[in-house]
Image (tube, rainbow, N blue to C red; front, side, top):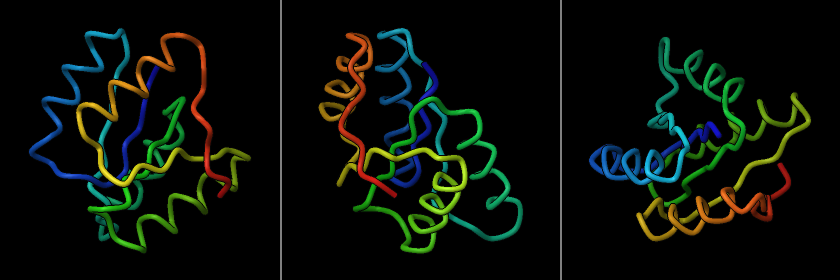
Length: 107
């Protein structure tokens, strides 16, 4: 499954990517910046992702609102996490591996 994560700390990306690969998933990251080509990159990530996770602790309000807007246009919802920690990701991956989609927050 392809998981898109919007926001969070860049330094955690390699750890989170390894954790996802171990569980048979792929993660793409967007740092929440919306200037220049980053806005198009966010839209592309959302289009490709099976599940979109929005990190609220390290993210801009503009990126969160834009993500919700793009998801709403596609009739989809997001999973909101305060932090994208390894333990939170592992819990999400366990649910996805078991075929359980986490309770999304409506956009």
